Length: 514
Image 1 (cartoon, one colour):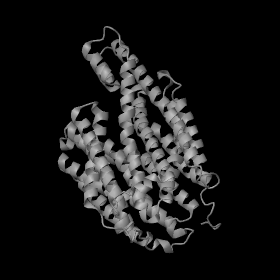
Image 2 (tube, rainbow, N blue to C red):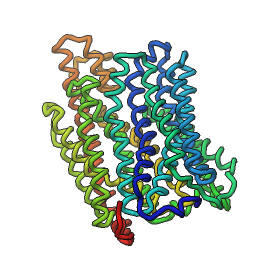
Image 3 (cartoon, helix red, strand yellow):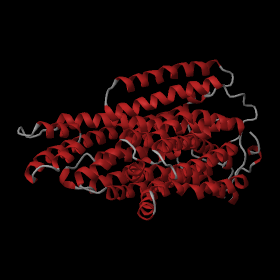
Image 4 (cartoon, rainbow, N blue to C red):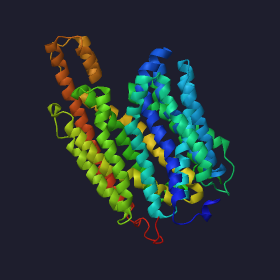
């Protein structure tokens, strides 16, 4: 490592200010994810974007980010994480401006792709620099908790800020939110952040970079399309192609002296178990939150804004959980803190199986608060365990693997839980026998279809369709919550047994603290 080895064991004021600087891109990335959804109707009208183009506007960022994560994490180890973070921040700034002033759907899609490349540099570099700034285990855990909570805060404020901007300015204004933040990071970063890199790193293998892209991009595309439209030849072929190139990629890594991904990281007990936990946690989070938002809107009858506000208590609880986890892990073994938290998260999930359509939103909000607060130690402490267990010179690679677990988890969650929810919905839907074929087909497709079809019917006929459709969707929600209960309990057992060797954070550290 360069420069980092000379850093003091205990972080001081400069390091904590550096953490604040690193939190800036995390905050703006979270906001960007939510304001795009708010701006989509306006920009689609202004740019005359087709449905397919709208899908690419929303999806291209995630596709490209997932494809470049592994490469950017390893690149940071080689050229320096601060340097890569500054380059990525500058690219994100340019991409944001291009998005704001796009004059066509094609230009906006290209600008969003640039944001994806830039976004792939931000998270792994930030993680690596946090581990470089905070060498004391207790402080590192706290720093990762604060950094993780920043994303929750962005999710909370994103809809509020975005809604205000759209009420007073044109749709492109929401993309300019990141410009002053990235400018601030470009000014403060070189002054506050140490350079961190592996001086013994070999050359970047171009073949591995290409293989990683042709493995990840088709796989992510295939999973997303299968989740959206069901089984179809092209997405299925895309998934198979991606998996095939993935096998070739990993075989090549075994043969290289300087691999793009060091497979020894995955074989490490602490890293491997933590990454598994992060993957399953994000799988459940992505699929479950989407189902909950749909329930709030289509069953409870909330507007989009009201549904977003109903998620805020859970987001706040999650942010608080990120702060509590490191404090507990400084006194007790992280495995037990995470495991007990996951049992609490399972209890919150189970609570959400015990309601019917007449109960309103309260049981869901309460259950989501419990699940978010108790489940927060898994991603918060899990990310810390991955970075703390990796060699310092491979912090970028480890950070990219942690972020990859989150990205793939969300994608798989939408696909798997979305498919299960759709199957349960269709299997339990019981429409009256005199329902017209057109209305029945729309209702069997989805609850949204049933709601749209019912809007053209008389009040009594609409209720005859909506009642069974809402009950069927509630059944699907119960099944997802029940699966979540089982998944959290299984993760709890895995973590408690596989990570029990990890001592409380800072057990061997010097007594001095900031």
